[in-house]
Amino acid sequence: MATEYTPSEMMAAVAARELKDGEVVFVGIGLPNLACNLARATHAPNLVLIYESGAVGAVPERLPVSIGDPALVTGSLMVAPMTDIFQYFLQNGRIQVGFLGGAQLDRWGNINTTVVGPYEKPKVRLPGSGGASEIAVHAKRMLVVMKLGKRAFPADVDFITSPGMRCKGKSRKELGLPGSGPVKVVTDRCILEPNAEGELELTALYPGFTVEQVQAEVGWPLKVRAPLGTVAGPTAAEVRLLREKLDPQKLFLKG
Amino acid sequence: MSGKVMTMKEAVASFVADGSTVVIEGFTHLICFAAGHEIIRQGRRNLTLARLTPDLVYDQLIGAGCAKKLIYSWAGNPGVGSLHSFRRALEGGGGLETEEYSHFGMVARFQAGASGLPFATLRNYAGTDLPRVNPNIKTVTCPYTGEVLATVPALRPDVTIVHAQRADKNGNAQIWGLMGVQKEAAFASKHVVVVVEELVEESLIRSDPNRTLIPAPIVSAVVVEPYGAHPSYSQGYYDRDNDFYVAWEAVSKDPAALKKYLDEYVYGVPDRAAYMKKNAGLAERLKAKPLMCAGVNYGY
Image (tube, rainbow over all chains, first blue to last red; front, side):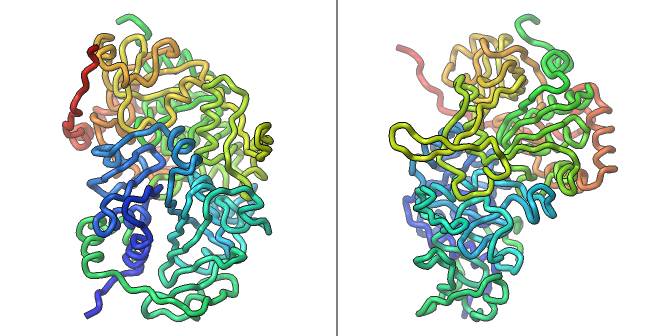
């Protein structure tokens, strides 16, 4: 019998499968954190989790509510000052995988976490970059975890906080950005990946969803890669770990 | 008591002037709310506040009318939502000046300030809209490789207030757990105020010198205020008060609720000891479990 699961659980499980054992991952709070800890509890026990707050090789025994939770320090391999995290680890190419999300993501994978509307007189003021823009510049393999939605996936973001595959016509190479940019976008219905030009296209559907249902939530005419892939749902063991061990209070597994 | 030890009231009166650039650092960990509250009580105005994450402490200072300008890189309530005093001051043009970077940009600004250099270089911002809205983000061409790199100006605060687990009376301060940019911010500053959970003997500091993050020669004042970082935390002393952060959403959203909070917990108490007395049960609820490290041999 197929395992029942929620969209958030699917996203965490799909993102977890992207991680290989032994990799060094720059982790954010929320679903990326759940994905990393799920991978650590299943196929990637030697994953090295780095948080921008300075914890390296963190093994959080409780779900961190903030990026600077004390549980990230207890039992970690190293606590580094933030200068070291950004310069020696991230800028110096020591981070294999970076995770990002945001309020808006566009067809070139640019991410906005700064403002909706004009910067000078914003409709909604969002938190800003934090460490996101440097993760987008430097991570060797950058993954995005975001729920689909017309407003969240416009053709062009209102503000480029974190660079994608192409910014205002310029490629990453032309801009001198060393990292990969968003090579995979894990959503609640499908996976998007950039084509050779850097435009995000639909590459795989989750069980039960159609191309039309994905297009309805995306603000640009979505190209569909052939052959279109499928993604298996989470296993019973993955769902159990997420619900019982990793986020029992459903802080981040809402919906 | 001798050395540089003084009360929070004296330290703020001496080192935080109207119109000055003030940094209360600490990345999630060791954010000195006690200092923020005293600045509010003393009615400071036109401050330029700098911090990576304004957090609740600057949301309170902005809400209390102390700030003219905010320099920052991520303004949210971590894991909860928004800083509503900050958002009110911006959405619809509330008059708060801002200067916005990424975390790395802020880290680099403090590092340049701490190093006595006019600016720092970093590889970032190409393709983003940040330089468009912040003219202080510029570029420089590397004289060795020809690569175009981003630059940010040094940040030299008038005063940095750092919370630490312990210090001696001269200000040799020891921190463990997340270190954020405390050291860089302190070395970049004209004055440094160290606020501690515990005042200890110099001999204890000398028994473990690798743990000293901020040395006495750069420290102007030492303030002893246990639980001074609440609702932030102090590793080994007390946990982060996540419930407070969650509750702040409703408080900061409603200007009347914010005023009531400030009246009761900031203006309504003279210092941290009185604040803790008012928050009965708080210390017991958040007290850290003992988890001692192995210790090392400094002998030779």
